[in-house]
Amino acid sequence: MGKDLRKKILYAVLNWGLGHSTRSLPIIRELIKNNEVVILSTGRSLMLLKSEFPEIEVIDYPDYSIKYVNNANFLFLSLAFQLPKILLGLWKENSFTDRLVKEKNIDIIISDNRYGVYSKGIPSYLITHQLKFKLPAVLKWFEFLSEYFNKFYFSKFKKILIPDLEGEPNFSGELSHEFSLIDRSKLEYIGLLSDTMNCESLSSDYLVLISGPEPQRTNFEKIISEQIKHIEGKKTVILGKTEINSYESNNDIEYYSHLPRNKISGMIKGAGMIISRPGYSTVMEIAAMGKKALFIPTPGQTEQEYLARYYKKNKLFHYVTQKDLNLKTDIHEAQKYDEIPKQKVNDIGNIIKLIMEN
Image (cartoon, rainbow, N blue to C red; front, side, top):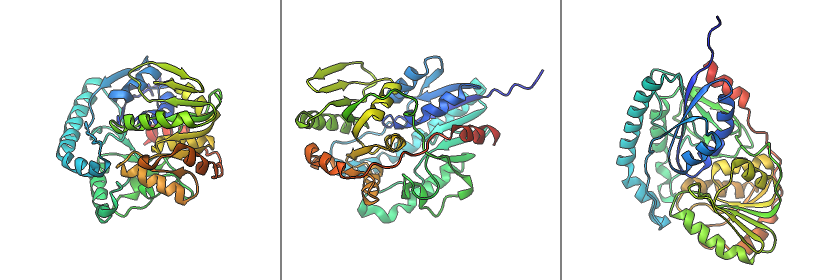
């Protein structure tokens, strides 16, 4: 009898918006063809993954329970004060992972941005596009400290899988291409990931994707709901609330609490313009389709603020801050940008080969 090549894989996903879960979908879909996958996540991300893979065993384990503040000016300070709790959460997460590996006979770990989900005894892989963390401008000179943090945790993983292109052009900029302390031999650029390819096009003039951590997700929803009434054309708003199932139609605006991924993919494919946060996974989906976009970064979330500036500087997409958003004016500005070329995505065969053969 031949050797059983099936592996039992623990796939962990951070619950920070829905981007980490959506970009993991094409990888998980390929893995389950020949392996047994156990998913570990929490919150809205877990809800999405359960809806997409109802047959897979899921484990609800909290991540770092980061609390956000309404005043974006104090967000970084708030995160700094929470650092001891975050570090304790990472330690607890790793202890839980070690127990889980033994109880479930796990062979391989893949973790999308959950730094504590690794085990010394088995191959562990971390998916991230942030080799360093962006800090507010007044603290920019301290960004190198985040490389020390990453260097320590990256050492726990066999490989760091970066969902971006290695050369130029790329979509993560300094986040995954400018560093000095990280061991380059641990890095693998795996190309862009997107779950928007094989779907039926669903047309609209504007598709608005509301996402991100609270309370800013709700703040964004309120601003959009007020301003979008004054925009002509067919508009679809997806609220990113996986915990409820609601639909409302108001003249030429449709509001969905949440939709299955194939429907959202079809809407992205058929939209004239995307209006959303510049969350990196959303950017990859837009790039896959070659769409125009207007980005409104989450206030105080330095990664999104950096990416928005990076895209505008490179004449890819227009952006505006949430407090300055004027949809009518900013849509007009975003229309001036050329559509970007559709990007090649989902080199899943090579990703699976890298994970299974190392």
